[in-house]
Length: 317
Image 1 (cartoon, rainbow, N blue to C red):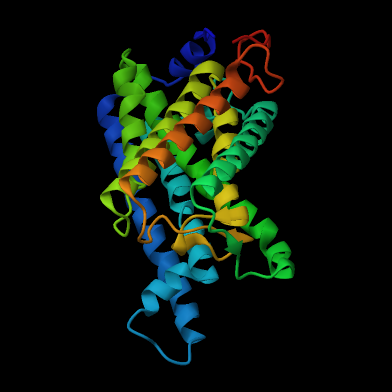
Image 2 (image 1 turned 120 degrees about the vertical axis):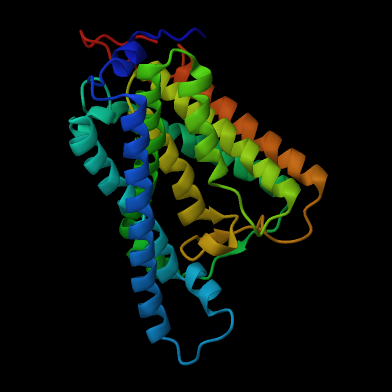
């Protein structure tokens, strides 16, 4: 299963002369600053609304807010700061339109977006079956079906905001900028992937569970990077990332802090009782799921095979 790099070479050569390492660092600093400021503002506003509805404030009120529906919505909305920061960085630091990050043709491949979404929904279902075999502790979530349907569109929209902002930053801005300056994938692929993976560390989980989650996230980051490399476009990565997060937010949640809108809840990974063997098996399930997704999206005979963005519009892999 060889991948033609023609599309990626087009993508990595799209930045103008204004994209150098110093400006890339400056742009990244702007994104982080805007992300932090937006997060603080949105969470402050959400917390104000949450506490205004509470008759009494407990010592664990902040934890309650973050795990509440208002807290989840606020957390997702805070990722708008990445979009704002990227627009400022691209416009004023690099002198390029924000759409330049989407692909060589400055647009999202809709077909690849749908293929990435479908493929990850399929493999997520498989991984949930395997996780159920490992720990059959699935219960009905606290949200009613009518409320779930009411919040379905807002959650999908905010999850798209969250996942697309991360893809634009890690597989777009950083990957594209570094690939333009450096030929080695150990720089342009590894560094954004490590940054992306490190953000998923959980202070409430054991070392073993954190390790297995980070291994699974790193494998998923590799998948997303391969999709950009194969297509020269963020479309497939955007769809795959959205499918992964929608599964956790809306269907089956494995996190105590993000299960407000999930129809079902599984044994939280932050909770006690997980052994080192469990952690190894969870990591293996994540890796197998990622490998299957790679096959579905990149194998020449797969009906979900993504297509490379090339000048004459031909589809190649």
